[in-house]
Image (cartoon, rainbow, N blue to C red; front, side, top):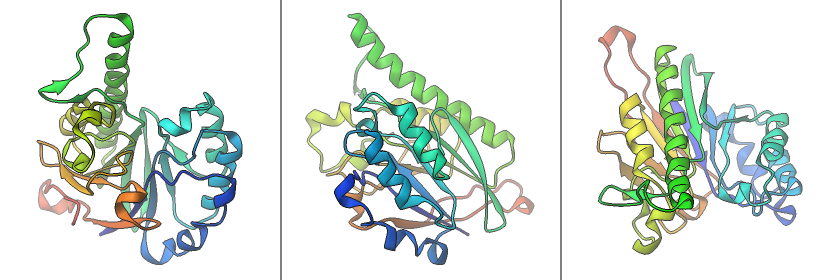
Length: 254
């Protein structure tokens, strides 16, 4: 059993330095890894990124992150990524990483993702160039997630996790106004997860949403935006595959 700690939308700035550190320092006692589901900063400045870096450096457990829309606001995502990586975080965008946790090999595939909406009520790749580019960006993010999950499967990981900022399902948006659902996630992410396979999907972004959801293919989805979970992080228990059990599928626990 792997203990997965996760949180998103911590929106840190200079005045919040040290707020999460006491809780994060308890992670080795209760978790095997920490997932950060984007919107780690308020405006994506390097000053804010350094605040996050000091919060997560040297925690004693692996830290895996994706960026969110706030982390892109200052148009310096590569520099924000570099600051977080210098602090030891695995920052993913269209790629995956394999971690050794509790004697198991855990694969995490990550992308920021993007909007577009959900089946029956979604944007289409049609019309003005800016509209087509909107949907194409969502598709590129989803394709990167799918390819990363597939590579992790080929590497024989004991469990695979999809980490995004935007939501792959409408379930975890319950509580958010319907009018903004297209800007909170895309069904393309869920299609990628179901096509490639995963044991758990974690996202943030939907502050007024709901924690629990599921893809149509049966992958459990968790919205870990801090306003939703109401704590520094939440821990999920993830069974790992028993290789002697002829490919039995693992599922994330409630």
